[in-house]
Length: 149
Image (cartoon, rainbow, N blue to C red; front, top):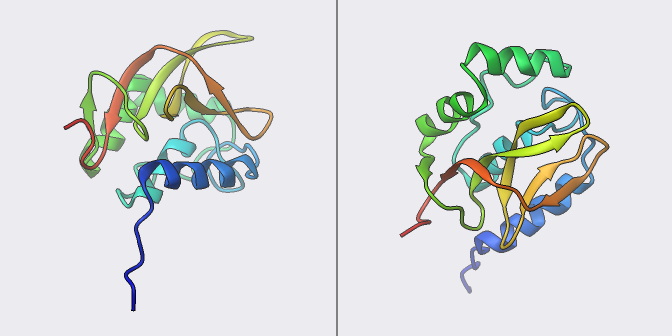
């Protein structure tokens, strides 16, 4: 019997994003996915564990999400506290499949969101559903597994 070939990170990411495209936006990660939960779900997909387990399902709106972030000292400290204990490590430059906090411009002004890196863009959760591809500066980047040499 032939061994089943493991999918490459790029193939896994493509399948993950296709599923996310069909998943509605919803705060808190129970009835859908928001910008914090999409990177957390990618971590689960990779087998790294759920960095969002402590707060998954504990908020249902933007105000609830912001309270969690403020309690952690901000977006980047929150992501670091969630990702690093399960094996994600901070790196200087992004590679395929890395998770980051990126700065985006919204109708309310500049904000940070969680994103996943593909070959050329950041994949972000769109509030109106689906995913978007952005060119943006990463404020902080984490990798998991054997990436980054």
